[in-house]
Amino acid sequence: MPIGDATEALDTFYALYRLPEDNFEVVVAGPESRLYHTVLHEIPPNPDVPWDITQERPGYHLRATVAFKDLREEEYAGAFISGGRAPEYIRYDRDLCRVMKAISMANKPIACLCHGIEILTAAGCIEGKRVTTVPKCAMDAEQGRAIYVDEDVVVDGLLVTGRGYGQNTDVLREFIRMLKSA
Image 1 (spheres, rainbow, N blue to C red):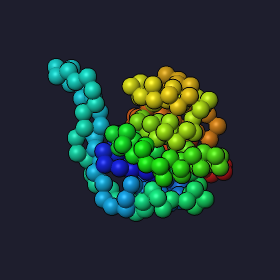
Image 2: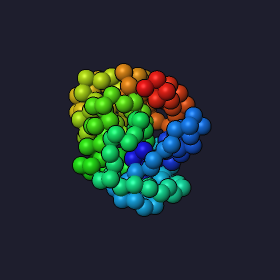
Image 3: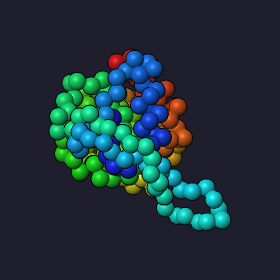
Image 4: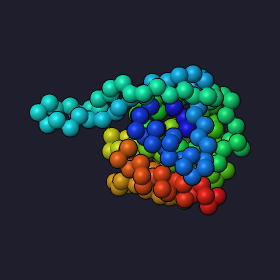
């Protein structure tokens, strides 16, 4: 589970606690092995105060126990990529892209929510795949040569993508099914 500062709290913590319920160990990785800040990442629902872009408020903290440079694809059954603003920044990390590409090439399951699609695009592992994401990241999916689908959850082979934290349950259900079948 790659994270960085401004990782979306609901995306991340739901998977962090849900996966061990099915006996999967979650390894949290970051640019460095250290404590990171999560955020609540949403467009405020108050129509009296228009807000056209996503607002971020501080969330909980989460420790990455391994740095991207120390990740080895063969040690992992798959990858779960959360959203928030972190993907916008950590997608430039060559080691993160290396391991995401390797996991994809090894035909291991990948789950991705929201802005996480930016990491998959940067890693070059969604070409020709049907994916979804938040509408404002549709262009990121298309730049990765994926086929953007305007749906809540999309499964294409061993890749499951969801718009955002509202799709946590469906995305994790599919991801866990894939992990158990692998």
